[in-house]
Amino acid sequence: MIKLDIDPGLPLIQDADLKDKVVLVRVDHNVVKNGEIRDPYRIDATLGTLYNIVERGGRIILMTHVGRPRDKKTGRIKVEDDNSVQPVVEYLERKLNTRFVVPQFPADPEWGIREIDTSINWHIRDLRAHRIGVIYLPNTRWFEGEESRGEKRKRFAMQLAGLADVFVNDAFGSWQAHVSTFDITKYLPSFAGFLLQRELSNLKHVLEPERPFVAVVAGAKYDTKIGPLKQIYKKVDHLILGGIIYNTFLCAKYDIRVGGVSESDIKAAKDLVKQDKNAKKVVELPIVVESDTIERRVEGKYRTLNIKDFKKGNGYGYFLDVAPESFNAPGVAEVIGSAKTIFVNAVMGRTPHFFEGSEKLDRTIDKNRQARKFYGGGDTLQEFKNLSPGLYLAAMDNAKYYFFTGGGTVLKAIEEGTPYGLEPVKALIENAGKEPK
Figure 1 (cartoon, one colour):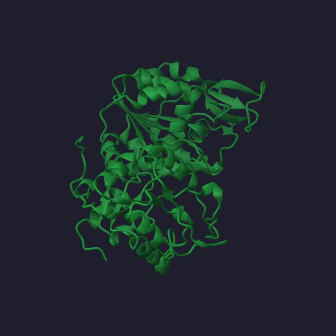
Figure 2 (cartoon, rainbow, N blue to C red):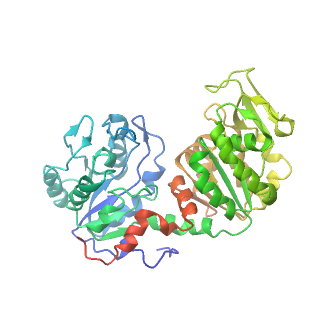
Figure 3 (tube, rainbow, N blue to C red):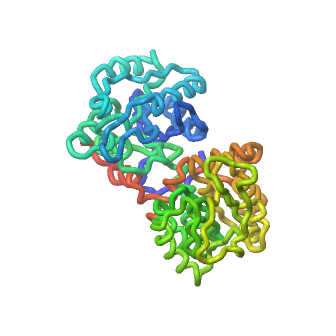
Protein backbone atom coordinates (compact mmCIF):
# COMPACT_ATOMS: atom_id res chain seq x y z
CA MET A 1 0.00 0.00 0.00
CA ILE A 2 1.32 3.47 -0.95
CA LYS A 3 2.31 5.50 2.10
CA LEU A 4 0.53 8.86 2.09
CA ASP A 5 1.48 12.08 3.84
CA ILE A 6 -1.47 12.27 6.27
CA ASP A 7 -2.01 14.03 9.61
CA PRO A 8 -1.34 11.37 12.27
CA GLY A 9 -4.50 12.42 14.12
CA LEU A 10 -6.78 11.40 11.25
CA PRO A 11 -8.48 8.03 11.93
CA LEU A 12 -7.97 5.76 8.90
CA ILE A 13 -10.15 3.01 7.49
CA GLN A 14 -7.21 0.61 7.51
CA ASP A 15 -7.25 0.79 11.34
CA ALA A 16 -10.98 0.09 11.67
CA ASP A 17 -12.48 -3.24 12.73
CA LEU A 18 -14.88 -4.02 9.88
CA LYS A 19 -15.49 -7.75 10.22
CA ASP A 20 -19.23 -8.50 10.35
CA LYS A 21 -19.90 -4.77 10.72
CA VAL A 22 -22.43 -2.68 8.80
CA VAL A 23 -20.43 0.25 7.45
CA LEU A 24 -22.15 3.54 6.57
CA VAL A 25 -20.09 5.18 3.81
CA ARG A 26 -20.53 8.82 2.77
CA VAL A 27 -19.37 9.30 -0.80
CA ASP A 28 -19.56 12.16 -3.29
CA HIS A 29 -21.39 10.56 -6.20
CA ASN A 30 -22.91 13.90 -7.16
CA VAL A 31 -22.49 13.24 -10.88
CA VAL A 32 -26.12 13.16 -11.99
CA LYS A 33 -27.64 15.95 -14.07
CA ASN A 34 -31.15 15.75 -15.47
CA GLY A 35 -31.31 12.11 -14.46
CA GLU A 36 -28.12 11.07 -16.27
CA ILE A 37 -24.52 10.47 -15.19
CA ARG A 38 -22.27 13.08 -16.77
CA ASP A 39 -18.95 11.41 -15.88
CA PRO A 40 -18.46 8.38 -13.58
CA TYR A 41 -14.96 9.43 -12.47
CA ARG A 42 -16.06 10.39 -8.95
CA ILE A 43 -17.91 7.08 -8.58
CA ASP A 44 -14.97 5.00 -9.79
CA ALA A 45 -12.60 6.86 -7.45
CA THR A 46 -14.43 5.39 -4.43
CA LEU A 47 -14.35 1.75 -5.56
CA GLY A 48 -11.08 1.01 -3.73
CA THR A 49 -12.71 1.85 -0.40
CA LEU A 50 -15.78 -0.26 -1.19
CA TYR A 51 -13.70 -3.28 -2.25
CA ASN A 52 -11.64 -3.01 0.93
CA ILE A 53 -14.69 -2.96 3.20
CA VAL A 54 -16.16 -6.08 1.59
CA GLU A 55 -12.80 -7.87 1.55
CA ARG A 56 -12.50 -7.33 5.30
CA GLY A 57 -15.95 -8.66 6.04
CA GLY A 58 -17.97 -5.43 6.18
CA ARG A 59 -21.42 -4.81 4.72
CA ILE A 60 -22.02 -1.46 3.01
CA ILE A 61 -24.69 1.23 3.25
CA LEU A 62 -23.88 4.07 0.84
CA MET A 63 -25.09 7.66 0.86
CA THR A 64 -24.46 10.75 -1.26
CA HIS A 65 -26.08 14.05 -2.11
CA VAL A 66 -27.21 14.82 -5.66
CA GLY A 67 -27.73 18.42 -6.76
CA ARG A 68 -29.48 21.09 -4.68
CA PRO A 69 -33.09 20.00 -4.18
CA ARG A 70 -33.58 22.41 -1.25
CA ASP A 71 -34.79 25.93 -2.06
CA LYS A 72 -32.51 28.32 -0.15
CA LYS A 73 -35.22 30.94 0.33
CA THR A 74 -38.15 28.77 1.40
CA GLY A 75 -36.31 25.69 2.72
CA ARG A 76 -38.63 23.45 0.71
CA ILE A 77 -37.24 20.24 -0.73
CA LYS A 78 -38.10 18.86 -4.16
CA VAL A 79 -37.94 15.07 -4.37
CA GLU A 80 -37.63 14.47 -8.11
CA ASP A 81 -36.21 11.86 -10.48
CA ASP A 82 -33.70 14.42 -11.77
CA ASN A 83 -31.84 14.37 -8.44
CA SER A 84 -32.30 10.71 -7.58
CA VAL A 85 -29.42 8.31 -6.84
CA GLN A 86 -31.01 5.72 -9.17
CA PRO A 87 -28.64 6.34 -12.14
CA VAL A 88 -25.66 5.87 -9.80
CA VAL A 89 -27.15 2.65 -8.43
CA GLU A 90 -27.71 1.27 -11.93
CA TYR A 91 -24.13 2.13 -12.89
CA LEU A 92 -22.70 0.43 -9.78
CA GLU A 93 -24.85 -2.67 -10.22
CA ARG A 94 -23.38 -3.12 -13.70
CA LYS A 95 -19.86 -2.33 -12.50
CA LEU A 96 -19.87 -4.55 -9.39
CA ASN A 97 -22.26 -7.31 -10.47
CA THR A 98 -24.17 -7.18 -7.21
CA ARG A 99 -27.69 -6.29 -6.17
CA PHE A 100 -28.39 -2.87 -4.70
CA VAL A 101 -31.48 -1.77 -2.79
CA VAL A 102 -32.66 1.83 -2.45
CA PRO A 103 -35.08 2.03 0.50
CA GLN A 104 -38.33 3.86 -0.15
CA PHE A 105 -39.48 6.34 2.50
CA PRO A 106 -42.61 8.53 2.47
CA ALA A 107 -41.79 12.03 1.18
CA ASP A 108 -43.65 15.21 2.05
CA PRO A 109 -44.29 17.23 -1.14
CA GLU A 110 -42.75 20.32 0.45
CA TRP A 111 -40.32 19.14 3.14
CA GLY A 112 -38.85 15.97 1.68
CA ILE A 113 -38.24 12.79 3.69
CA ARG A 114 -38.83 13.47 7.38
CA GLU A 115 -37.89 10.09 8.88
CA ILE A 116 -35.87 6.97 8.22
CA ASP A 117 -38.64 4.57 9.16
CA THR A 118 -38.25 1.03 10.49
CA SER A 119 -38.94 -0.58 7.09
CA ILE A 120 -35.20 -0.24 6.43
CA ASN A 121 -34.50 -2.89 9.08
CA TRP A 122 -35.70 -5.61 6.68
CA HIS A 123 -33.11 -4.48 4.14
CA ILE A 124 -30.37 -4.41 6.79
CA ARG A 125 -31.21 -8.01 7.74
CA ASP A 126 -30.92 -8.98 4.06
CA LEU A 127 -27.62 -7.08 3.85
CA ARG A 128 -26.14 -8.91 6.84
CA ALA A 129 -27.36 -12.24 5.43
CA HIS A 130 -25.76 -11.48 2.01
CA ARG A 131 -29.12 -11.65 0.25
CA ILE A 132 -28.34 -8.20 -1.17
CA GLY A 133 -24.98 -6.60 -1.89
CA VAL A 134 -25.38 -2.94 -0.91
CA ILE A 135 -28.01 -0.58 0.47
CA TYR A 136 -27.90 2.87 -1.18
CA LEU A 137 -29.88 5.51 0.75
CA PRO A 138 -31.91 8.12 -1.16
CA ASN A 139 -30.28 11.49 -1.87
CA THR A 140 -29.16 12.79 1.55
CA ARG A 141 -30.50 16.25 0.66
CA TRP A 142 -33.98 14.78 0.29
CA PHE A 143 -33.97 14.28 4.07
CA GLU A 144 -35.34 17.23 6.00
CA GLY A 145 -32.74 16.86 8.74
CA GLU A 146 -29.62 16.92 6.52
CA GLU A 147 -29.30 20.71 6.35
CA SER A 148 -31.60 21.61 9.25
CA ARG A 149 -30.78 22.96 12.69
CA GLY A 150 -31.76 21.93 16.20
CA GLU A 151 -33.79 18.85 17.02
CA LYS A 152 -34.51 17.81 13.42
CA ARG A 153 -30.80 17.76 12.69
CA LYS A 154 -29.94 15.75 15.80
CA ARG A 155 -32.74 13.29 15.15
CA PHE A 156 -31.55 12.63 11.60
CA ALA A 157 -27.96 12.12 12.79
CA MET A 158 -29.12 9.57 15.36
CA GLN A 159 -31.31 7.79 12.80
CA LEU A 160 -28.36 7.47 10.42
CA ALA A 161 -26.11 6.22 13.21
CA GLY A 162 -28.73 3.62 14.15
CA LEU A 163 -28.27 1.94 10.76
CA ALA A 164 -24.62 0.94 11.14
CA ASP A 165 -21.70 0.02 13.36
CA VAL A 166 -19.01 2.13 11.68
CA PHE A 167 -18.91 5.33 9.62
CA VAL A 168 -16.45 5.98 6.77
CA ASN A 169 -16.15 9.36 5.07
CA ASP A 170 -14.87 9.09 1.49
CA ALA A 171 -16.62 12.24 0.23
CA PHE A 172 -13.83 14.73 -0.47
CA GLY A 173 -16.11 16.83 -2.66
CA SER A 174 -18.66 17.35 0.16
CA TRP A 175 -16.91 19.85 2.42
CA GLN A 176 -20.04 21.39 3.96
CA ALA A 177 -20.76 20.53 7.60
CA HIS A 178 -24.00 18.63 7.00
CA VAL A 179 -25.37 15.77 9.09
CA SER A 180 -24.10 13.02 6.75
CA THR A 181 -20.55 14.43 6.66
CA PHE A 182 -20.15 16.09 10.06
CA ASP A 183 -22.68 15.32 12.82
CA ILE A 184 -22.60 11.57 12.20
CA THR A 185 -19.02 11.37 13.53
CA LYS A 186 -20.33 12.05 17.07
CA TYR A 187 -22.43 8.90 17.08
CA LEU A 188 -20.33 6.20 15.37
CA PRO A 189 -16.65 5.16 15.28
CA SER A 190 -15.55 7.19 12.24
CA PHE A 191 -12.71 6.85 9.73
CA ALA A 192 -11.35 8.39 6.53
CA GLY A 193 -11.68 6.27 3.40
CA PHE A 194 -8.88 5.71 0.91
CA LEU A 195 -10.06 8.36 -1.55
CA LEU A 196 -10.31 11.01 1.15
CA GLN A 197 -6.81 10.11 2.34
CA ARG A 198 -5.42 10.34 -1.19
CA GLU A 199 -7.04 13.71 -1.81
CA LEU A 200 -5.77 15.19 1.46
CA SER A 201 -2.26 13.94 0.73
CA ASN A 202 -2.25 15.50 -2.74
CA LEU A 203 -3.68 18.76 -1.42
CA LYS A 204 -0.42 19.27 0.41
CA HIS A 205 1.37 19.61 -2.95
CA VAL A 206 -0.98 22.46 -3.87
CA LEU A 207 -0.73 24.16 -0.48
CA GLU A 208 3.07 23.67 -0.30
CA PRO A 209 3.97 23.66 -3.99
CA GLU A 210 7.27 23.22 -5.74
CA ARG A 211 7.94 26.50 -7.50
CA PRO A 212 7.29 28.19 -9.84
CA PHE A 213 3.61 27.61 -9.01
CA VAL A 214 0.94 28.53 -11.58
CA ALA A 215 -2.79 28.44 -10.87
CA VAL A 216 -5.49 28.65 -13.54
CA VAL A 217 -8.88 29.67 -12.12
CA ALA A 218 -12.15 30.45 -13.86
CA GLY A 219 -15.78 30.68 -12.86
CA ALA A 220 -19.23 31.92 -13.75
CA LYS A 221 -19.38 34.49 -10.91
CA TYR A 222 -16.62 36.63 -9.45
CA ASP A 223 -18.12 37.14 -5.99
CA THR A 224 -18.16 33.40 -5.17
CA LYS A 225 -14.40 33.15 -5.76
CA ILE A 226 -13.21 36.28 -3.90
CA GLY A 227 -12.09 34.44 -0.74
CA PRO A 228 -10.20 31.63 -2.51
CA LEU A 229 -8.75 34.06 -5.09
CA LYS A 230 -7.19 36.22 -2.37
CA GLN A 231 -5.50 33.19 -0.83
CA ILE A 232 -4.47 31.69 -4.18
CA TYR A 233 -2.94 35.03 -5.15
CA LYS A 234 -0.73 34.95 -2.04
CA LYS A 235 0.52 31.45 -2.81
CA VAL A 236 1.14 31.53 -6.57
CA ASP A 237 4.00 32.85 -8.64
CA HIS A 238 1.62 33.36 -11.56
CA LEU A 239 -2.18 33.40 -11.86
CA ILE A 240 -4.14 32.83 -15.08
CA LEU A 241 -7.85 33.72 -15.06
CA GLY A 242 -10.69 32.59 -17.31
CA GLY A 243 -14.43 32.88 -17.78
CA ILE A 244 -16.44 35.61 -16.04
CA ILE A 245 -13.63 36.00 -13.49
CA TYR A 246 -11.22 37.08 -16.23
CA ASN A 247 -13.84 39.31 -17.88
CA THR A 248 -14.44 41.00 -14.53
CA PHE A 249 -10.71 41.56 -14.01
CA LEU A 250 -10.40 43.12 -17.48
CA CYS A 251 -13.35 45.44 -16.77
CA ALA A 252 -11.81 46.56 -13.48
CA LYS A 253 -8.33 47.08 -14.92
CA TYR A 254 -9.14 48.72 -18.27
CA ASP A 255 -12.33 50.55 -17.22
CA ILE A 256 -14.49 48.88 -19.85
CA ARG A 257 -17.88 47.16 -19.71
CA VAL A 258 -18.47 43.61 -20.92
CA GLY A 259 -21.80 41.82 -21.38
CA GLY A 260 -22.79 39.66 -18.43
CA VAL A 261 -20.40 41.31 -15.92
CA SER A 262 -22.10 43.10 -13.03
CA GLU A 263 -21.05 46.45 -11.58
CA SER A 264 -20.79 44.95 -8.11
CA ASP A 265 -18.34 42.31 -9.34
CA ILE A 266 -16.26 44.96 -11.14
CA LYS A 267 -16.07 46.94 -7.91
CA ALA A 268 -14.99 43.83 -5.99
CA ALA A 269 -12.29 43.04 -8.60
CA LYS A 270 -10.61 46.41 -8.21
CA ASP A 271 -8.83 45.09 -5.10
CA LEU A 272 -7.17 42.37 -7.18
CA VAL A 273 -6.21 44.90 -9.87
CA LYS A 274 -4.68 47.17 -7.23
CA GLN A 275 -2.83 44.26 -5.62
CA ASP A 276 -1.48 43.11 -8.97
CA LYS A 277 -0.22 46.55 -9.99
CA ASN A 278 2.96 45.92 -8.02
CA ALA A 279 3.14 42.11 -7.73
CA LYS A 280 2.26 41.49 -11.40
CA LYS A 281 1.25 37.87 -10.86
CA VAL A 282 -1.78 37.86 -13.18
CA VAL A 283 -0.80 36.61 -16.63
CA GLU A 284 -3.12 38.28 -19.11
CA LEU A 285 -4.36 36.23 -22.04
CA PRO A 286 -4.17 38.87 -24.79
CA ILE A 287 -6.86 37.79 -27.25
CA VAL A 288 -10.50 37.27 -26.26
CA VAL A 289 -13.50 36.11 -28.28
CA GLU A 290 -16.34 38.66 -28.29
CA SER A 291 -19.84 37.53 -29.26
CA ASP A 292 -23.04 39.48 -29.87
CA THR A 293 -25.13 36.61 -28.53
CA ILE A 294 -24.66 34.40 -25.47
CA GLU A 295 -26.89 31.46 -26.37
CA ARG A 296 -24.85 29.95 -29.17
CA ARG A 297 -22.16 30.50 -31.76
CA VAL A 298 -23.63 32.50 -34.67
CA GLU A 299 -21.52 32.96 -37.79
CA GLY A 300 -20.69 36.62 -38.35
CA LYS A 301 -21.68 37.56 -34.81
CA TYR A 302 -18.40 36.81 -33.00
CA ARG A 303 -14.84 38.03 -33.44
CA THR A 304 -11.47 38.21 -31.68
CA LEU A 305 -10.25 41.28 -29.81
CA ASN A 306 -6.80 42.10 -28.51
CA ILE A 307 -6.84 43.61 -25.03
CA LYS A 308 -4.31 46.25 -26.13
CA ASP A 309 -7.08 47.66 -28.35
CA PHE A 310 -9.50 48.25 -25.46
CA LYS A 311 -10.64 51.84 -25.15
CA LYS A 312 -11.41 53.22 -21.71
CA GLY A 313 -15.13 53.67 -21.12
CA ASN A 314 -16.15 51.47 -24.07
CA GLY A 315 -18.80 48.77 -23.85
CA TYR A 316 -18.32 45.37 -25.49
CA GLY A 317 -20.41 42.29 -26.13
CA TYR A 318 -20.02 38.98 -24.32
CA PHE A 319 -16.47 37.63 -23.93
CA LEU A 320 -17.18 33.90 -24.29
CA ASP A 321 -13.67 32.48 -24.67
CA VAL A 322 -10.00 33.27 -24.97
CA ALA A 323 -8.53 32.67 -28.41
CA PRO A 324 -6.15 29.67 -28.64
CA GLU A 325 -3.34 31.91 -29.90
CA SER A 326 -3.34 33.63 -26.50
CA PHE A 327 -1.40 30.65 -25.16
CA ASN A 328 1.37 31.20 -27.77
CA ALA A 329 1.76 34.84 -26.79
CA PRO A 330 5.07 36.02 -25.29
CA GLY A 331 5.03 35.49 -21.54
CA VAL A 332 2.07 33.09 -21.46
CA ALA A 333 3.65 29.95 -22.94
CA GLU A 334 6.86 30.64 -21.00
CA VAL A 335 5.02 30.90 -17.67
CA ILE A 336 3.19 27.62 -18.22
CA GLY A 337 6.23 25.87 -19.69
CA SER A 338 8.56 26.76 -16.81
CA ALA A 339 6.17 25.91 -13.94
CA LYS A 340 6.96 23.09 -11.51
CA THR A 341 3.40 22.93 -10.09
CA ILE A 342 0.18 23.74 -11.97
CA PHE A 343 -3.31 23.79 -10.46
CA VAL A 344 -6.29 24.05 -12.82
CA ASN A 345 -9.86 24.80 -11.76
CA ALA A 346 -11.01 26.33 -15.00
CA VAL A 347 -13.07 26.07 -18.15
CA MET A 348 -11.93 29.02 -20.26
CA GLY A 349 -14.95 29.39 -22.55
CA ARG A 350 -18.70 29.05 -22.58
CA THR A 351 -18.95 25.47 -23.75
CA PRO A 352 -20.12 23.65 -25.80
CA HIS A 353 -20.08 26.42 -28.43
CA PHE A 354 -16.86 28.16 -27.39
CA PHE A 355 -14.29 25.53 -26.47
CA GLU A 356 -11.02 26.33 -28.27
CA GLY A 357 -9.49 28.18 -25.31
CA SER A 358 -9.98 25.27 -22.90
CA GLU A 359 -8.62 22.76 -25.42
CA LYS A 360 -5.50 24.84 -26.06
CA LEU A 361 -4.97 25.39 -22.32
CA ASP A 362 -4.91 21.64 -21.64
CA ARG A 363 -2.53 20.94 -24.52
CA THR A 364 -0.20 23.76 -23.50
CA ILE A 365 -0.06 22.45 -19.94
CA ASP A 366 0.61 18.92 -21.17
CA LYS A 367 3.71 20.10 -23.07
CA ASN A 368 5.31 20.89 -19.71
CA ARG A 369 6.65 17.44 -18.82
CA GLN A 370 8.44 18.47 -15.61
CA ALA A 371 5.49 19.98 -13.71
CA ARG A 372 3.09 18.22 -11.37
CA LYS A 373 -0.38 19.00 -12.66
CA PHE A 374 -3.46 19.08 -10.45
CA TYR A 375 -6.93 19.38 -11.94
CA GLY A 376 -10.01 19.95 -9.80
CA GLY A 377 -13.72 20.35 -10.37
CA GLY A 378 -16.38 18.34 -12.15
CA ASP A 379 -16.80 20.83 -15.02
CA THR A 380 -13.02 21.12 -15.47
CA LEU A 381 -12.57 17.35 -15.78
CA GLN A 382 -15.69 16.91 -17.91
CA GLU A 383 -14.53 19.44 -20.49
CA PHE A 384 -10.97 18.05 -20.47
CA LYS A 385 -12.43 14.62 -21.24
CA ASN A 386 -14.86 15.91 -23.88
CA LEU A 387 -12.41 18.15 -25.72
CA SER A 388 -9.28 15.97 -25.61
CA PRO A 389 -10.31 12.38 -24.84
CA GLY A 390 -6.96 10.90 -25.87
CA LEU A 391 -5.00 13.35 -23.78
CA TYR A 392 -7.38 12.79 -20.84
CA LEU A 393 -6.90 9.02 -20.94
CA ALA A 394 -3.12 9.41 -21.17
CA ALA A 395 -3.16 11.84 -18.24
CA MET A 396 -5.14 9.38 -16.11
CA ASP A 397 -2.16 7.00 -16.26
CA ASN A 398 0.49 9.70 -15.90
CA ALA A 399 2.05 10.09 -12.45
CA LYS A 400 2.58 13.81 -13.14
CA TYR A 401 -1.21 14.36 -13.21
CA TYR A 402 -3.68 14.21 -10.34
CA PHE A 403 -7.44 14.74 -10.69
CA PHE A 404 -9.24 15.93 -7.55
CA THR A 405 -12.85 14.84 -7.21
CA GLY A 406 -13.90 18.23 -5.83
CA GLY A 407 -12.63 21.53 -7.22
CA GLY A 408 -14.66 23.57 -4.75
CA THR A 409 -13.14 21.60 -1.89
CA VAL A 410 -9.62 22.38 -3.12
CA LEU A 411 -10.48 26.09 -3.26
CA LYS A 412 -11.96 25.90 0.24
CA ALA A 413 -8.81 24.20 1.56
CA ILE A 414 -6.67 26.89 -0.08
CA GLU A 415 -8.85 29.52 1.58
CA GLU A 416 -8.41 27.76 4.94
CA GLY A 417 -4.68 27.30 4.36
CA THR A 418 -4.84 23.63 5.35
CA PRO A 419 -6.72 20.49 4.23
CA TYR A 420 -7.45 19.79 7.87
CA GLY A 421 -9.51 22.95 8.27
CA LEU A 422 -12.39 21.39 6.29
CA GLU A 423 -15.23 20.80 8.77
CA PRO A 424 -15.88 17.09 7.97
CA VAL A 425 -12.15 16.35 8.25
CA LYS A 426 -11.88 18.28 11.52
CA ALA A 427 -14.83 16.26 12.85
CA LEU A 428 -13.05 12.98 12.09
CA ILE A 429 -9.93 14.13 13.92
CA GLU A 430 -11.75 15.66 16.91
CA ASN A 431 -13.90 12.57 17.47
CA ALA A 432 -11.13 10.03 16.92
CA GLY A 433 -10.87 7.65 19.87
CA LYS A 434 -13.86 9.14 21.66
CA GLU A 435 -16.70 6.94 22.85
CA PRO A 436 -19.63 7.58 20.48
CA LYS A 437 -22.67 9.25 22.07
